[in-house]
Length: 92
Image (tube, rainbow, N blue to C red; front, side, top):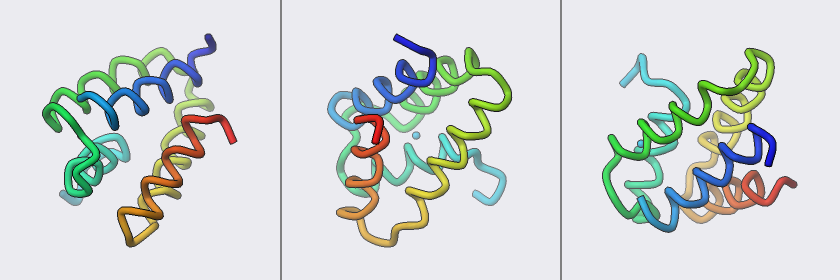
């Protein structure tokens, strides 16, 4: 499994099992998962797991990953946000 796919697998697990102005896209995503009742576990645990996995990404892959999360965070509804994250985890 590539690093990119591993990170998205963790995102999928965070959605199923258990993330301010200066917050990272990962923190914002985990917060949104929690707000949308899609996160089982803690926001802190979500952030820690994803940050650990994302730390293995090359700088360019990390930028792509953060941009993809930002794109999903632009959706206003939980339904659209969830669908976007699902597409990312499915590799679409």
